[in-house]
Image 1 (cartoon, one colour):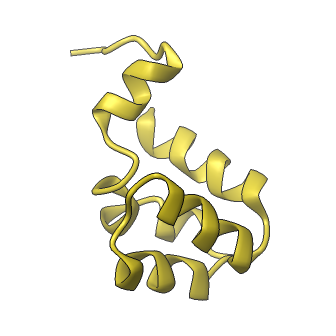
Image 2 (cartoon, rainbow, N blue to C red; image 1 turned 90 degrees about the vertical axis):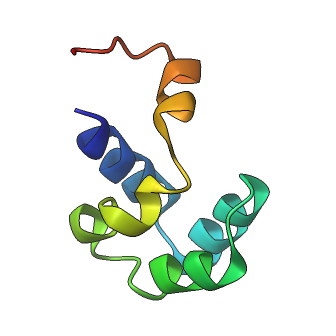
Length: 69
């Protein structure tokens, strides 16, 4: 479920420059943000391992997502 929400968030940011800027604002490592932003059109792939370290469970809790476990 969180994987899907992260993918939707990337899709809303649309462009690589926006993705890079927003990830840096969330405290991402610039190298990781650059890697994700370089492949801006691959929302599902990018919402996996790399983005999982930035948009964490804490981020999902702030959105109000319930935990299913």
